[in-house]
Length: 69
Image (spheres, rainbow, N blue to C red):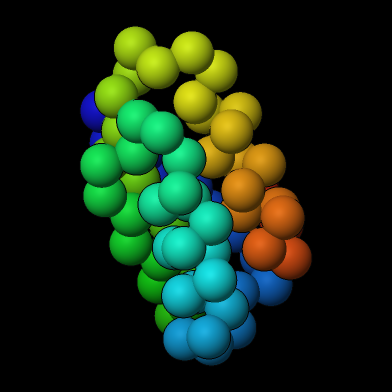
């Protein structure tokens, strides 16, 4: 499953890289692309992994970025 997550506070490539690293570390995530200029994170993941959407949001927040949706 793919999900587009809109975020606030991701202003440059460094912050986007931190978000990608944090989300990529989650079991069940197969691909992640953070785009600072679009203020969004695209995540491909196994939707059968328990509570993965909350884990993804928590990882983004832990990188210092606010999740908008």
